[in-house]
Amino acid sequence: MAQRPAYSLAPADSSRHPVQVAYYDFDWSPGMSAAQKRKNVAALHASIRERILGAKPLEVSSKSTLPIGIALSAFNLAVVKNGQPFRVESLYQGSKVFRDGSGPFHDLYAQSPKAVRAAIKPHASSPLVHFAWGRTHWPLEPKLAFYTWLYCTALHHVQNRPLADKLLREGFKHFTDIEYNPGRTLNSQSFAVAYYLHLVRTAQADAVLADRDAFLGVYPAGLPEGLRTEAAKRSP
Image 1 (spheres, rainbow, N blue to C red):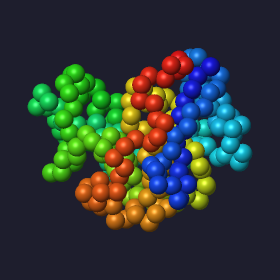
Image 2: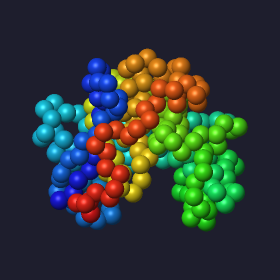
Image 3: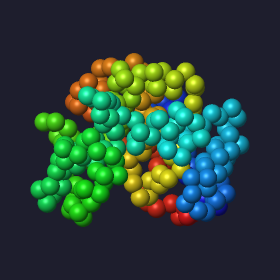
């Protein structure tokens, strides 16, 4: 038995965090193959549907069984410039600045996420101090802010508007990432998708995604209520 979170929008009249999280138990299929991971996605989504009548979950990762879920993976979602894709994950990793004086790694932006991660790995033992996006520095607090802004900005880009429109049109309500465990890392593409829907629902996307201070001015200071940042006890 395993347990994984799913993110969804809080009710529109909620005074708490606009994104909510719930955990779901499901039977875990061990193994590293894509087929095994898709089995786990199916089991997780079945658990969501069993608890919530009419639920329409979406796996946001390369392990998704739906093309839209694969396209929304931060390893695939990109903005293309001069024929070169700049993927969200590469932009995020390349924007890191470490206490040892290394970073940002803007020259790596156009490389694959795997290549960028490998290039900055020697510096990862040094504490992270902030993110650098152009000449703009992003603080580590609030947690998730820079990653979420980066993801939402890419999804809202005119090149990706058809993808964003399809996401809105399909009416997905719960967002998962089978390999995401908040006990190991907080950044979450499934959270970012839910937060993007919040910005669209409240008609804030155009205004706040264009400016760091505007985004931080509306972004919640705390994490979604109930999010477990310690390693989940029953996770495999």
